[in-house]
Length: 178
Image (cartoon, rainbow, N blue to C red; front, side):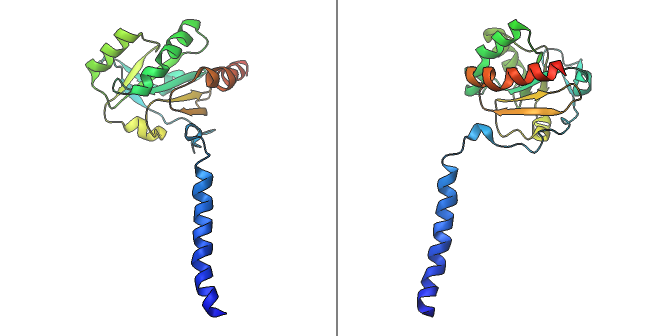
């Protein structure tokens, strides 16, 4: 009997491990939970991308619902979502601010000049410290922040039209109404 138990224990451990790994295959990587949801957005003050002498602070946005989009000129997926952000900016539904992440300033400026600039202001996070404070996994990432400076939503990866219409815009309208 003991002999069978000796073989059964590793088999059970293996079965549990396979179960967890198998479940992970069906998870959506763009819905990685963030510990910052419903918590204050990290405070920051950074120089503006287009004007290094000017600063922008997250505290400037208190009292407003806004989006923070983390992007970079080297990011292929950022190029995918960019036309959607440009169109959203034209509609003036919500102010969009950019966090240029670990990029070269002139390349980022050229990228916005060539593809359109949906941002009220882009700040320059050359070392990625503010991105780290926000828990950025990779670019692009987008945050919806409420009037009290609380993060209410995080979208990992490029925003799709469906995510914008079904999740982000309804949340923004709800937050703006409150």
